[in-house]
Picture 1 (cartoon, rainbow, N blue to C red):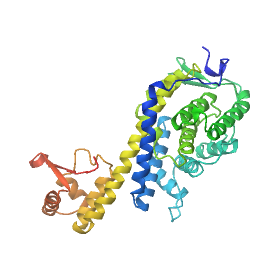
Picture 2: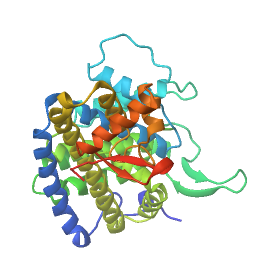
Picture 3: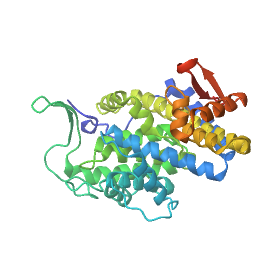
Picture 4: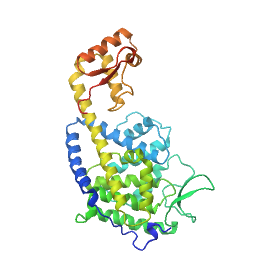
Length: 370
């Protein structure tokens, strides 16, 4: 088996965008729509939405690698790094603290050229809490760097990266390529999603670190997207990839066997568009929440406000199975009679809809943006 880096044309990737021209155009259109939606959000809600997307990215990029982090810890750390957490707080999970630092640093400094110093610093952040690896350095071991799966003795080798002795030269060339393609406006590679697709594949193929390559590689892809749209990209690429994780790994595995990467480009463009659609829905949902409370804040009692905030915290889908009297009582600690009266009032105001009857009655928020 000869991998991409072992072939004569490495790293001169070739591809066709014929099958995804429509999607590339749609990405540009939706980027404009998302900007317009964000402008309609109050500043506080705009910041909250950006944080939610950063949290989703931090959690999902770790989940792809089999690490499942506390949403609360990730949220607190991101707010701390953005200067939005005033009280002093100790974080129990250093992994959550590290990935949050990486995400916020990548977003805040997206315009800065990529450098060895940046990548090594990201690796130090990411490896917080990991005492088994020396962080902030390229890998140096002599044995092959292999991506494998399967039980011991029956391992399947999915990919073998370049030997450690080649890493400094390979990374110098990669960093030069990344920064050059950001400046070269006439190159087709300047297209946001195409450059991000190649950047991710290129970095993953070099695999310069002992651990953390996937998470850093996805941060590089989002940096590429941000640079070419000239603003921090508001989407969670990892959320879309984690949703169909097997497809992600299969596409990457296939792409690392040839430097003709059209299938990888098709996969990456479609996945990025899906991430963009999810981000658009989240922003629309934030806009709905802002407008909802502007309209109804003075027409609802404290119990109703508390319940609706709790439902909205679950996202556009609300509670699984909807709201019922028992859940209402659990949230507000009120009586059954009061809960029933509050729900009837919400029905009459057209804020919720009703499904079923008797003990099977459920209530759902009417989300006008969906």
